[in-house]
Image 1 (cartoon, one colour):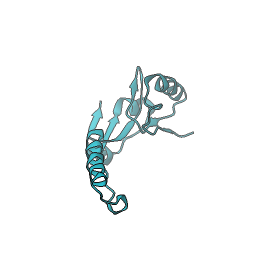
Image 2 (tube, helix red, strand yellow):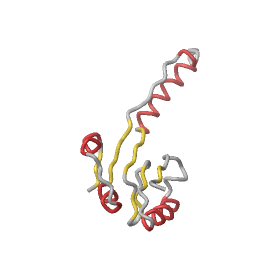
Image 3 (cartoon, rainbow, N blue to C red):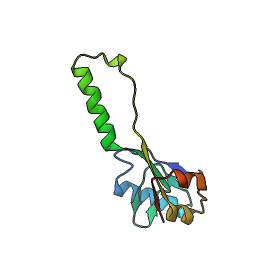
Image 4 (cartoon, helix red, strand yellow):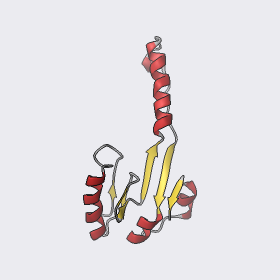
Length: 111
């Protein structure tokens, strides 16, 4: 196994789950990424999440249109910008080199 990619969903972002997964991955030198999590000495290398506040606002706007009679199939699909966090401490602990281009795209870098 080269890496573990977590999808940010209720189970994978709980501290208890990540403590077990993080310990296993660090003991076996397996990088973890996907959801921005830090539990004790274990942290994911990166996290990519949608902006929940913006997503909720967009959802409210779409629901309002549907409740006012707009057919759902006629409404364009919209997405929010994602929030990228890179944990350099975790990356260095795993020996992972994070490219400069990726660092420039990050919204938050943990050093």
